[in-house]
Image (cartoon, rainbow, N blue to C red):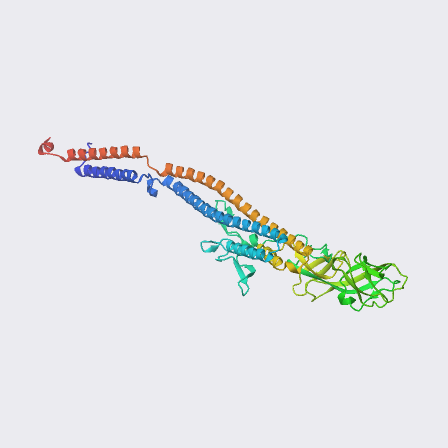
Length: 480
């Protein structure tokens, strides 16, 4: 049987071939114009899923790189501001050293106040609309300054968050701290043994104090007692006028007969004071401001020698609201009646009454350290040389501590910046590899695409030519 093809079949076949050629030419033209081999799932269903996955990974890497860049800017800003704080604290330490020797301490105190204002300004620096030292909070200014009527700073309060702002910088959810907490930087404390800055002889006890900042220990005299046998008794002014404190053996009263001055008495090796049988309330002063009022009217005329004595008193850390009798032990626990804060005092070496500054070392902020220095400079005339020197030494220790802490935070941020550089380089390398893989999957081979497009055009023209010849018939074709 002879199979014959009709003209309609030839026509259908020609149309199909032409459509295939045109579709392929269109696809190849799109590759040449876009440079892409795959633009939709139908272009290569088997590869399209892998291409989408690689593009998503590359997009995440770009987000991490953007976060790294933003984090670097914030950390660079923070390091710059903290460098300025470090310079200001170094200047404050120099001013403190100058204040020990200078006679114009009011001027130096004004300079310290200016340093404090500059530190507050730096602490309130902003990154856009956010306080750079506000941590994870959204405050514009991290610190609130309370001022006196004459606009002098009195107190600084932290308004930000206690945790830093963190940014994800790596696929494994690795983060970096960017906006640090000002509480950690400027308000940080690290308690060390309490320092007593006066002349009472009190020392830090063996317990851990809970009070903070700068306080006062009030040592009050209550009663002086003398060893029996010498006839010495306290004078009427003794309860309120005596300044000595101490257990038996810590203080002595000596009585002698001077060939010229007659009967004389002295306290703790101080100057000799004449007395007679009418000395019923005699003030006898010793070294270092020690003083007793004694009644010597009953001292036998022939007595010479040393009279042992004991002076009792009380301790208070709340300006006398509550008092604890001195027992001359290694640890006495004092509680502030208003705040409940605890102070442990070694009272075994207390030798005199008075009010003594107590430095709860390591518990002041950057601002409080500057406040203390300013106050000590302005009130220098109220203290003895030794007391003032002790106060300035305490101020210097606190300034050194807060300065070192600021430098430590700067070091942490410098390490973070270094880690960011390393991570950025590694992420860029991975991103480049991913982009290369995407290109290999997605990019068109331009040379091949052009050659194939030319081939398809040739095939299309051949199809048109064949169709033209097939349908170009005459009467003779039917007669054959």
